[in-house]
Amino acid sequence: MAVAFPFSAIVGQDEMKLAILATAVDPAIGGVLVTGDRGTGKSTAVRALAALLPKMRARVGCPYSCDPDGAGAGCTFCGAGAATERVRSHNIPVPVVDLPLGATEDRVVGALDLERALSQGIKAFEPGLLARANRGFLYIDEVNLLEDHLVDLLIDVASSGENVVERDGLSVRHPARFVLVGSGNPEEGELRPQLLDRFGLSVEVRTPDDLQMRVEVVRRRDQYEHDPAAFARHWQKEDASIRRRIVTGRAQLGQVRIPDDVRESAARLCMALGTDGLRGDLTLIRAARAVAALQGDAEVGKPHLRQVASSALRHRLRRNPLDDTGSSARVQRVVAEQLGA
Image (cartoon, rainbow, N blue to C red; front, side, top):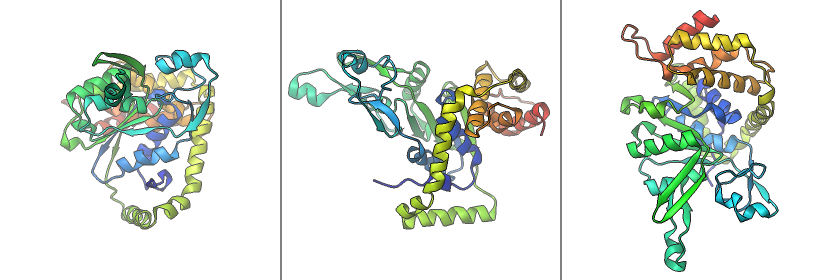
């Protein structure tokens, strides 16, 4: 099995790493969209996430890795005969599933198990990528090039948390709750607004313009390619520290207080930017709370809002023909006006 590049060894790209860690602490934030130049560590960071996340408990035998402490809502395996048996569980890695651009709809949503149908005459469901991604992360590289029918499908599943398959004489529904992570280069095509709105956070990555940072990126990559296992061992302690912060953050998330003045500051910021709807307000508060929990703070403050404002709001701005500055610059300017430098 290939050894993933350690998450803690990624040089720079602090906004991207913070957004990924925030969604690991609180998946309710929604997905993460990472856009920017080629070769800036977008895919590396997402694949490093799989090795970083603490393992999760899942019900033995369940094809959707349902939580044994949950009700198994929507899962035919957990809701039928298995519910009368003693629940057995095991620890498994949190799934980080790749959705290739050329994937067929059957491979994504699942389809009739042809082998069992031909050999046994049984109509059985063969789960797809959405089933594998349940309770984990679904990663789409070059998400802006995804075919329209798959975009529509993902929008439906992401909003409902359930995958419904009715074809080939099958009628199946199963839980499909995942954090959607997409990456792409805006120069190769824009993302459809309906899917863009489903990403809780949007981050931009750029080619580093600092000489020493570029040298360090090349040095670490060279060390990793020379001996991946030794390189991973070297960064094992740092990765373990981040993993402990995620575990602690998840445990403390519900106890983190959000003062009314912070809620008002978030609302004023969204109003000043003219964001559509209230999803920006909700995401901003959730992300700030997750960052506070990740950093061990008992209360959300304006510094937490400042850290996540650009990620939570840059992709929710209306186009302003009188303002030709980029969305990131607009957010940072209004953040400085509303929250201070």
